[in-house]
Length: 229
Image (cartoon, rainbow, N blue to C red; front, side, top):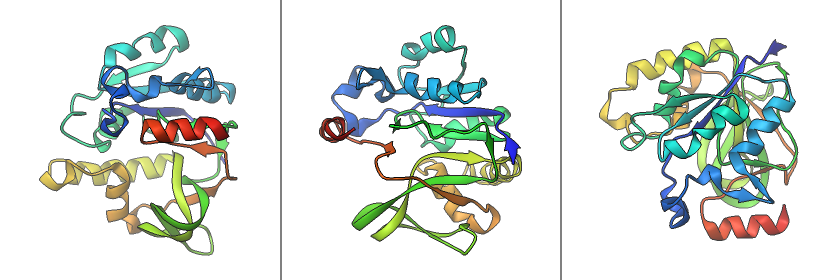
């Protein structure tokens, strides 16, 4: 088991699929069940003793500045958020990556999934019955991810937070440095870069119960989720 050093919360994206609301505020500032998404996630991390929390900002970054005073978070600005995908937020926060949770600011956790100590690098997953368009994982007998496909059937899918060990962080940043300035990298999620180099970057899955982790890409999807949360 290793002690979690910190958490990196990626909050730089424009969230164009969440328009028109995202024209006014970053998606992570949406209120769900009376709580601001990113505030809830910060509180859940702090409840588990994780005090160093780095929020990577970009789109409408000035609207997130209050988090520094309210929670004592570290704000890091991603200057490339308009022209690159979320791998640029990893790059912007590179000096903080160690034994770190790496999170998306717009996830909603019905129960607190975080822990002060973690045994290995993982990506959180939930099981989906039937057909899905999510990122489906295949694992070996030790739950190490062997393959990821977009779309599948009756599968564990990648959803929510990840944990990066110090070794994983070092290896991923080495890979990122090599591909960062390649034109084809600009549009890639960090997960896509991970998949491209999956043999070099061993990561397990962490299985979670249904109705624990939520994400939404549209306002209609948010309305539906609020009903069931």
